[in-house]
Image (cartoon, rainbow, N blue to C red):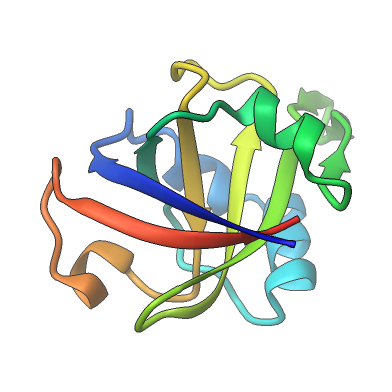
Length: 131
């Protein structure tokens, strides 16, 4: 099953760049995306659904538990495979320890999405999530 999500592009807190550079996260995203991810995420505020709804609705939600790395505990995350026009396959994620509201998700791609799609904060975007 595929779910169409309509969302608005929003600016993040600039935390993802740090985590995307850590080898364990790079390896996770490389494994599920099939290519090296860009070291940052594209944040979206989804209309009419929260990440909790997606976890309950999507049978193939991938769950990565918290894990140890260099003496620290790094937060786990939910991952969904998805697709966006002009980008192809993407990953949609929701970190367990996110500071965002429940309707905010992050997109992982091998491209700089805001430049590839020529979008600004507040612009409407559409994507599909595979459930």
